[in-house]
Each structure stands twice: as C-alpha cells, then as structure tokens.
Image (cartoon, rainbow, N blue to C red; front, side, top):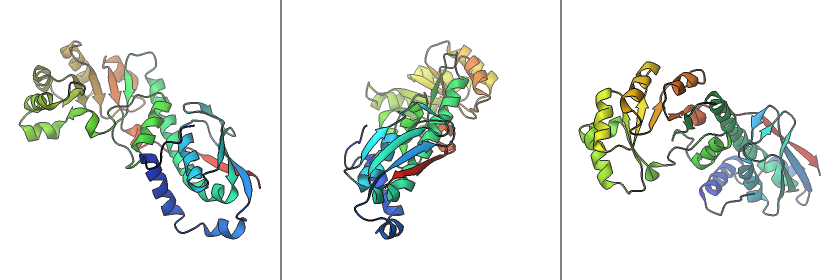
Length: 282
C-alpha cells in the first residue's frame, strides 16, 4: 500500500475534502459513537468495475486515524463484481464513519475512470493503436485520475504543461504559423522533451514536419481525412488522432493506421460507479 507522503498533492486533496465535509467535527458520529469504539468497515462493489483509488481511500482513513490498518482485497486494475470486497479498514469507528463519504467519493470516481478506460482499450484490441488520456482532468485530481487511466489499461499523455510540448492552434496563431511555432519550440526545448504539433490540413502536416515536429496531433478529422494523413506522413513521425473519439468509432479510427488516439472523455465524462461501505463490527 502506497501511503504517499505528507504534503503531497493527494494529501492536500484529501485534507481539503475532509475540511469541506467534516469541518469542525462530525456531529453525528461524535454524538452516537463512543470515542474509544473500535471496528472495521468493508468497501465493496455494487456493480462490475475495474478497481482504482484503493490507496487514496486508505489515506482518507489514515488522515483521521493514523493507527488505522487495512486489508486490500482488490488491487489496482483488478475486476470487482457485485458484492466483492475492495478494501477493509480497521480502527477507530468514529474515523471510519467520518471518512466514509470522502473515501467513497474518491474511489467511486476513480473506479469509474478505470472502468470506462477498459472499455476503450477493449475497443482497440488487436490493433496497433494505443489509447492516451488528456489534461482534461478534475482540478486537483490529475495524479489520481491518470493513475486510474493506467489501471484501466490506458497510457498517460503528458502529465502537465511542464513535461511535454504540444503546439496547438492557438500557439500557432500567436507565433504566426505552425512552422514558426514548432521551430521556436524546438529551439527552446530540452532534448528530453518531445515536440508535438496539432495540425488539421495537408499543408500544416508538411509545414510542421519540416520545422522539426516529432509527433503530430490530428485534431477533429473525419476517418477519411485521417487515412489520407497517414498516407501522407508515411511513418515519418508518430500520429495521434483526437476529437470525437467514441467507443463506436474507435475501431474505424484504428483501421486508418494512426499510432495513438487521445480521449478526453476518459476523465471528463466517466460516470462514477457504485460502491458502498459496510460496518462489520463495533
């Protein structure tokens, strides 16, 4: 179990969430549950899902009860069916009840992302095309949500603005064209940073490659346009397709020969799945 470190991004997120939900105290738990009561709680699935966020849930309870102990029943990326246990927590009963909602909110969201990602991965099965996520994540939850994508079998695109260069249409407009924007990016970029450029026309494709783009993002092209772009590039740089990537469309996009598809919906539109917590003993 990875409990992270005090003050890291997940710790800050959990403390913010608990401050929002608990504030100065859990009036119900404090009134009903003796301060010294000990017990256990079981987080279990109420539908079929791919597991993610177990350590985040555990960190919620640890924030309230540093002595809490855990039994991981399903690891990241594993399947859980209705009734299957995912995580058992043992410790202060007040802490378990106080942290229940925050822990469930996190794990329901993250399992939802992992479950949706798995469906997209399955739609690409048997093709060379790999599934990427995007930066369209919930503010403050990017680390957890990108981990959930990995749990579902997807691959992370750049994690933030500082660890990759993606020259988009607005950058090109500000620089006076895609070629000039790419040249500026290549001139300033560390050799360890990939320079990718967003293009949508045959002319932009050639301009970006000639300027030194190391990967191209084909944005909002229909399937026939994607195939023509693949034929034009002829393997000179990897190609990523993005925009309108539905489950139903993915096999057709993969058939065009692109190397990657990026799907914002993995994180911005994944529905939460249903899990619950059952107090097992007091």
